[in-house]
Image (cartoon, rainbow, N blue to C red; front, side, top):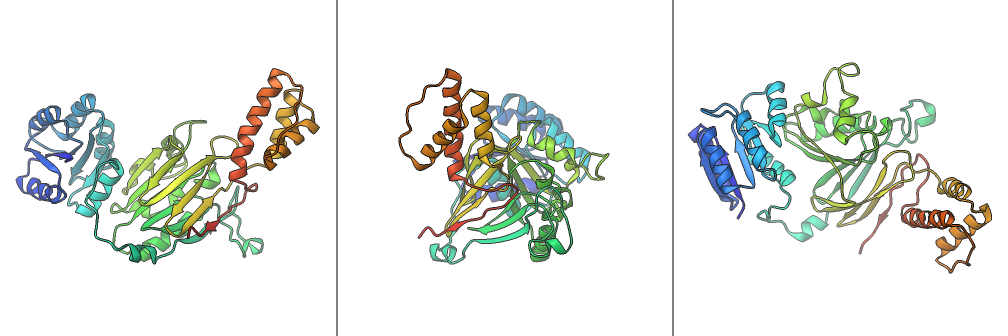
Length: 385
């Protein structure tokens, strides 16, 4: 049974929150001030802590700092009635994992817990399998260009916006890349959901500008009811969050990433396979400058592959061969044999040449599975039944 500690000086708020968690089979611990909360947290080591901001004795900032220093795995959600950007920033810097505004619905809180603690078993919602399978995956292209958005007669057929693809599958809304096309997607989502909150997952293939330039103009990010999870790989220059925030710094944009009122969570991926709800995602790195990945989404109605940027492999293969003393003929013969899965003739080469062959073999096998063209989007749906 997972444990939650509610640190709140308002008895009625504590009672309501405790009822939410008790109903979902959590063990509930309660504290009416910051000092008592810290003591309970260190003694019981709960998986989750809900903490008010303004409390007697130790306030919420002090509670976050004290607990975070000693309980790294514990997730902390600050729940406050104060909607100030400086409070949100200070709470996150003190060690909070999320900052939610009162009054808070169980729907929003539950979604936040699912994101922060995906390993916690949840009571399954009653849902018939035939009903879920009756809704096929849906794909909509909001942007397919590379480099820069270009309007005009030449882009009438495919549109002039940069990369953004919307996928609806198995109850999830998954957005692939945040090029300029995401602006129109945001407007469409606002119209569809109206006053209701929305839960979205954004997968970033890489952080070249044509794949992230629309994020500052994505209107759902400006609604505090919405939960937006951003996933991607980085590391070539800086962390994913820092890269996304840089284009919204004061010299370039009037609103910083930290000031966005939505519940925006940016997670830098470390694994090549992960889950987005019921959708399993597999990723592969591309032959493209920096860190660039393509994604395959396994849904109940088929498989969707998104692989936007990849340079032709031939030029790289020949470059490696030339660098390591392998003839062009030998390199082409090697690649042909690997592609056809036939035995390769023995060759006399140096140790450096053998290393280059192993590298080419590894990269070539990866590219066989994820064939694509330069600055293009390939989407394939393969029926699984």
